[in-house]
Image 1 (tube, rainbow, N blue to C red):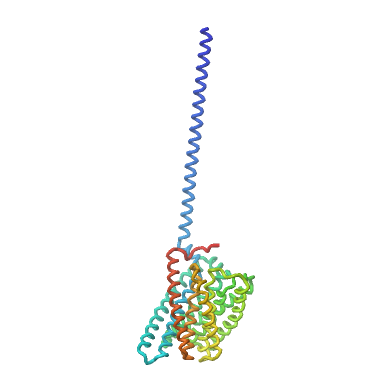
Image 2: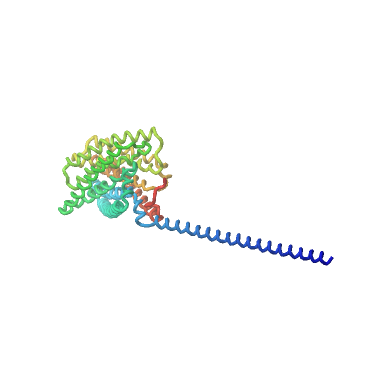
Length: 401
């Protein structure tokens, strides 16, 4: 009986020891799992931290000056056209008011004010041009592939001519100082360099059009810039005292392609899908060619005729058309293409004051004042929006696909 009891006790003790061993093993397994999960958590935390560091690194790269330089937009040169154009319209307004009432002290005072504004915006345009040119040359040398992509882009390629056009507008402004021989020599140098660059870019762009399958939905009034921009040459040539025959070559090329592109772009706007919202401001460019034609006509032929007046009326029609679309333009989000509002308004103001001084109708003076006011508002407002976008880091960034 005792033996049986001892055997039973011995079995119970063995079972208890076995359970203890099992509990010990379970604890070991649990500890192993906890350690494993802890290690996994630490690794996950390290991976998250690593990804965060990578994101911060990419963000820092995006904010690096050289990286931003790669995305420096060629369209910024349109600001020089706007600022320089505003200087020219103030200059022409000064001449028109002096012409309208030479004996009136009030008009003479206003004439002096307009002349002062012309100087302010003229020299501001020179400063902006030199600053932008420095950045763009740096972009070419440090990010040549980005520059190459720009000159083979169906939209951006059209804005390359904004560089020589800006220089030609500045030359026209500086024509007020061409009585000085040193200044006149400088103007001639700038004029010839800008004119030849404009010619080279015109040939390059047309070659690009002929050699590539162009997408019709990308056709917009911005296409006027590289070719019809040749119409600016006679303005600058007159200020630099260049032979009219030289300027007539560019005038002829500009007029020829203006007629062709007007037909093509108008057809595209009527029969194809609407322009993307960011390109809608370029519709204002329709105003510029006929307006510049009016001023060129006097510079080349020494006067005006029914033809120049007819072209002024074409500019006036497009001006009224754009004003009728104001409800469309006021709903647009800001883009650098807003600079397309500025120079055409300046050109219309210049043409209006020019027409007033020839035909002496007060109506043309009213249109000139309207163009001046709208141009001043457009330049100041778009300048503010551009500076605001720069302060928020929205300029010189990769474009969204």
